Length: 96
Image (tube, rainbow, N blue to C red):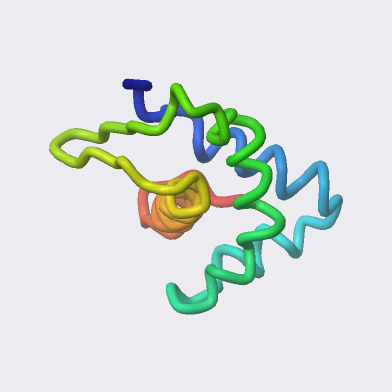
């Protein structure tokens, strides 16, 4: 079992600013609706899959509070994308 990553926002922000190199990508991501987040599967999602080594078969299980993930790495990375989006859009999040 692997601990739930605590640096999703930090790593996601680094990815969006370094790989896209355009601050407008963060704004675009922040303003995306929940049903539009799948468009980040091959960008931010791929980054999370690679950065957190989600393809490693020993890291199939993830736990976050009372939730346990025993799912495909694609599903886990999309959960991370949604979690990052939620944290980015919270009122108490530092505005970028």
